[in-house]
Length: 199
Image 1 (spheres, helix red, strand yellow):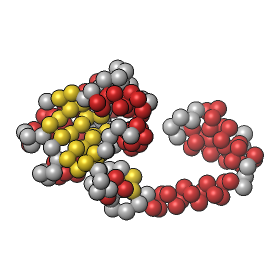
Image 2 (cartoon, rainbow, N blue to C red):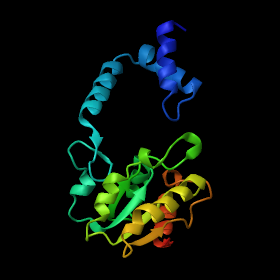
Image 3 (cartoon, rainbow, N blue to C red):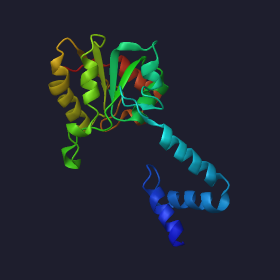
Image 4 (tube, helix red, strand yellow):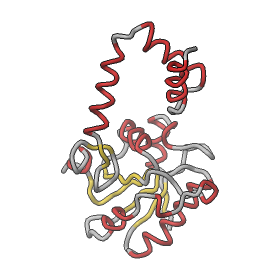
């Protein structure tokens, strides 16, 4: 291994889902087996980095101020599904079981890891809940200690300002300690259909 290759491998290893061996295979593939794809990859990364941002309303990925879901007037504006991360939103969309709007927190509360309310996408959520359009919030957070803590915080601190708001939580079909990202479409549909009142 050359120093340059080791440096590339170390950077690749930081990506989700890539361990030492996978990072090594990707690095060797890009540099030696198909070097012609490397400029295209660099160009695609630079283009995506320059054009992609967070939707100012919900926190989803967008190339304009609002994402395609927020701009879709066929979506049910009265319901907001709160998820931890963008891959969770994508998994929900893939299931085809939900046609409302979303809000991405970009994490969950975790005092152990130093993640507090100030680290989550809460300000725009509070602003959205001031609207008379919203009458239900669906909590689609992980079924673990941090997910429970986040749901409790939202109920006590954020939703309490709007007592007419219905708050429900998916959970049926999702294993304890599991998240939305790894659930299949049928499980997600069952979880949504069996959502229960949370507060």
